[in-house]
Length: 150
Image (tube, rainbow, N blue to C red; front, side, top):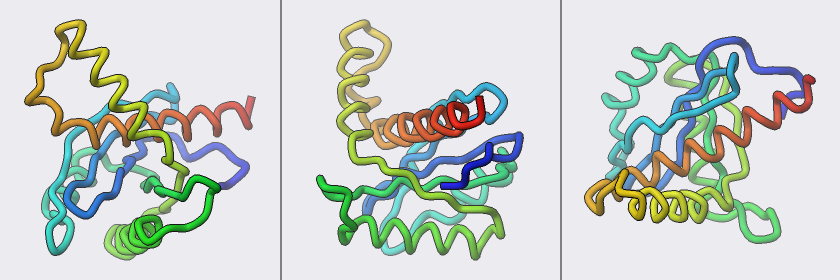
């Protein structure tokens, strides 16, 4: 990770998976993030949906979550996420960063349960779990960059 703050603007975060890719957007001015949507990933990512998101948000940076092993080691999934990040960089000519997302899925599931209990989400909203996971690791990444620069 660089030691400087990311450029001002938006960052798109991607929670890579073999079936779905959760997407969130973060703002470097406020160091906050919001979940956007979940993009399908069959034989290849739904590039038309990702093209639309990149066009709509015009991010300065793309952040891909790395599902590392319990001890921080690379896994087959983290290597696939790195390949996805490389494809993003090649396709959009934008800076691509990677973030440890080991605990984001668990945190997203807990947040989902809380939101369901409060009546703010329904069971059918479970498709947003991947986007919520992207939001969580993007928020953590933004905050860590904010903390380094304050």
